[in-house]
Image 1: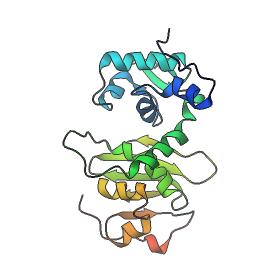
Image 2: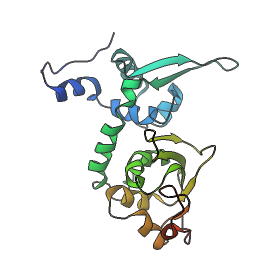
Image 3: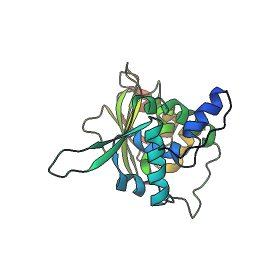
Length: 216
């Protein structure tokens, strides 16, 4: 049974925090928005969480119907965790949090872990209206891909895309500037801080023609 405590307040915000307000819960959602993950993969991409804490949070999230556990078929049977439809509706919540927190990101602290796909959520909003389709993003720390524009909901995944309409190569400092609104994609390309190739807004944009690749 879930070990969650309630605020016992008849308030929509309090009810939401009853479900996702515990430490690590929203960061687990962040990881699972990229697709189903095995427990070991979740633990690897949530540095700092103990195995007991992660197991407890996942159990609580299953009880709250945010997460389900599914067994993969042979030949390598294993369990994966994935978000329910209700869990996936937390993407706008994380986008709002990322927008609010972007201005607090300065240079990484010596103790900070960094994963490339952690920049996916803020970039979804930063690229909205600029790019369209699947965009593969390459950072020094790794690759991830986004789906923006069109009729479907925005989404992202860890690792390279099978096929992509556009490619963005840049660095974490530029991603941070894009996320906070300090820099637009066109400005990043024009100043050589990013290289972008592919479609923008459904067609190739001459303002975003490939520029000198940044040092990454």
